[in-house]
Structure formats: C-alpha cells, structure tokens
Length: 219
Length: 184
Image (tube, rainbow over all chains, first blue to last red; front, side):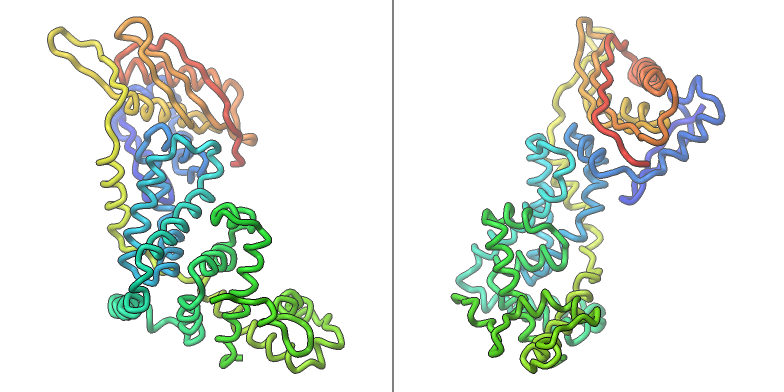
C-alpha cells in the first residue's frame, strides 16, 4: 500500500500517495483519486490558523510563507533598512506564534499580524530616535548597494515618494502605508495605533497633502 | 513638527483633501465650475495624480524578503516550542514509548482532510482511562457546496482507522464539532 507524503510550497499543500499506513485501506480507487486531488487545494487562512493554534508547525509555516512578503514590505518602508526589516519580521512571527492561543477569532489573524508588525516597527524607531538622521542615511546607502537591480527598476517618482515617506512622522507613515498601500480599514488602523478613526483620517489626509507637494515636479 | 490643517488650505478656499475626494468626480467628467477654472485646484490635482500613480507603483512593488527568512523564522519557532502533552504508547515495560499529542493530532487532521468537503481545524487529544486508548475532540470546517452525504460518518471512520493503524492505540471517544463552513 501507499504512504501519504505532504509537501508544502506555501501556496498549496500537496499530499502524495506512495506507501500507505492505513488510511487508504477500505477506500475505493475513485476515493483515493479524489483524496489526492482535494489535498491539492489551497487551505484558507482560518483553517491554517486553527491548526497552528494546536501547535501544527507545518500550518504555521504556510502562514509565514503567505504573509512574510507584505509584512516585510511594510517593515521595509517603515524602517528604511532591509536588515532591520528582516529582524522585525522574524520577531513578529515569533511573537505571533507564542500568542496564538490568545487569539479569540481565527479570522482576525491577518489584522493582528499587521498590528503586531506596525507596533514592532514603531518600537524599533522609538529605540533608535537619537541617532535617527545618521542611521537613515547609512541604511539608505546599504539598501541601494544590496539591491541594485531593484533600484534600477524604480521610477523617479517612486524614488521621490520613498524619500518623502521617510520625512513623515512614524505614526503618519504607518497610517498612510497601512491604508494606501496595504488597504487596511480605518477601524483596524485606529485600533493598531490606539487612536480614533477620526485621528487616523486626519493623519492620512496630512500625509497625503505633504506627499503631494513632493510630487509637484512630476505633474 | 506640529502640523496644522490650515497649512493645506488652498488660496481658493478648498483644501487638499477636498481636491483628493473630487479626483474621481473630475476624472469621470463631472467637474464643477470651480474644478475647471481654479488654477490652485488644478495644480493640486496634478500633484495628487502624480502621487496616485507613484502609489500604484509602490503598492505593486514586489520586493521579496531574503529566501532564507522563512527558515530562520521557523527555526526560532521550533526552538521556542517544547513538546508538551506526551501520551503513552502500548509498549513492554520497562521500555517506555510515548508520542506527543501534536503528532497524533496532525495524523488525525490528515485523515479527516481525506473526506471530500471537510477540512480539519483543531484537534484535541487526551488519554482516556487506560494507557492504550485516547479521546479526541476534532473541530472541522465543511464546504457548503461539496459536502458528501454521510461525510461525518466517513470522518469518524477514517479517524478511527488512522488511530488504530497509524498510532496503534484505541479510540475510546471522538467528538466532531463543525466549527465553520468554507466556500469551495
């Protein structure tokens, strides 16, 4: 008989029947066929979260693969340094793993992930405040050095936008990025920053006006 | 730096946010007299359009984290997790064999997943009265499109088979809880 092997590339989980240890017994050929087909479906977040809460690391790994990209991009724009962004994302996924049992609602996972990442970034920025100017310059250059291929692809407008973002306050930057780039709701952003939706709307409006001024040369 | 909303008031009396809110209206050709004639609004609108296209580019950005980040995260997660809830397996004294409840849970979730329209979610495993039997509470999500008739019995059967054939203990009790439905 055959065994079921599970491979997980982050997008889909595939079960392969090679040598069975019992599950396949008593199944018709058709049922086995369907089992393998069905196992190839992409599992939804809520299912992966529920399994992770039980301590299933494979499911958690699938969630990490699914969300490391957006969290990394958020952290990179918040912190302006790829090294700091990697550290922050690693820290966030460990914190989230530890606190999973406290999560009330499986569907709230992604919002919670954004909240944890945002707050982690704000803490990192607060901790480095005194030498912020020096650090930013330094990180900027490291960043271009390590990613030349990326730097070349970026349009002048976007480079200017990236630079202008660093001139916003960290809280404004967080609000603006979460809303305009990551499409999170005003309610969620307000919760994340411990403020009101009114205040979030105000911060985003001011950020937008400030950024638009920088865009003036391209109009 | 304290920022004041008045900083973003245009000389014509509209503020930047109003111009932003009206962008789609203007794009749709429903501009009002002021939109069309005011040079301040026109200049701001152009800046906002430039911003909008830069933002689209930023949102479509595909900078990926380094390829080893998942591995680093998972090593940290593994180092952080201790094997809890060890359950005894039938074995000859004095040689003791035990298995973690998590390992059993992943085998049983897997067995439940093989039923069409069923996805296992949480799986709590406890030792029941005797050392060679366990009690299981399995929560599942079911598809509201493709759930086969008799699916719950099939889940029960597959899980019971997996307990016997893959773990080597008896299943004294299995509670199945439908925790959710999914659309697939």
